[in-house]
Structures are given as structure tokens and as C-alpha cells.
Image (cartoon, rainbow, N blue to C red; front, top):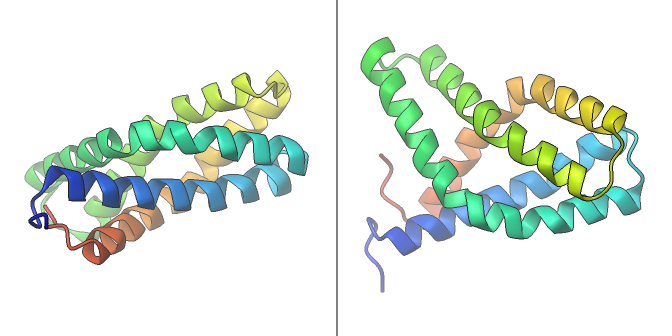
Length: 145
């Protein structure tokens, strides 16, 4: 129905990947590291779904540009790609995450702990998300950049 270069197909794959990944990893961080209650975490994760739907495709485009610049200036090395994924994830997702936590009534201490934990965990999460996003794009038969 849609070609592998279809914007709708790409947006759908990016949205699916971000919603699933952020729901699972966000809940784990919020409960295990940040001290949010299960109810607070569920509120945060449910609120994050529409937010992730809105930001998923712009994030995917942003990430693709960051990776493209990294390849142009740093070559096509494994380390350069992983660092670019890490930078893209942290620089785009952290401000959004802080706003979500603020909107559900997390205390400033909880927000600081959650965002800081997320930054530290993002050293792995951002890179893993890059691979997960590419996996989802292949599942949705999206042409990879």
C-alpha cells in the first residue's frame, strides 16, 4: 500500500518504536531508580504515549540528521555511530522527559533524580534505542537512511 520510502510508513515505524521503548524503559527507571510510585509511573507513562506519538517522527528525523553528520565528519565507524545515537537521544528526549515529570506532579527532587538517572542510563539506552528503531523500521519495511 505504501512504498518503503513513504513518510506515513516511516512515521508509523518511528512512533511504534518510541512508544514501546519509552514505556518499558521509562517505567523501569521511574520505579526502580527514581522512587516514583507505580501509580505515578503509570500516570507518567500514559501521559508519555501521546507525547511520544507527537515527537516520534521528528525525533527519528533529528536522529537521522545527527547520524548523517556524524558519518560525514567522523566516518562510518561503530563508535561514531553509537556516540551520535547517544547524543541524539539525550539531547532530544531529556527536556521532553522533564516536562512530563513536571506535569504529573513529581517533586523537584524526583525530577532531578529521574532526569539524571535517565541521562546516565541513556549512555546505554540511547544506543540500544537506535538499534531498536532500525529494527522497527525493518519490521515496517522502511528504507533505512
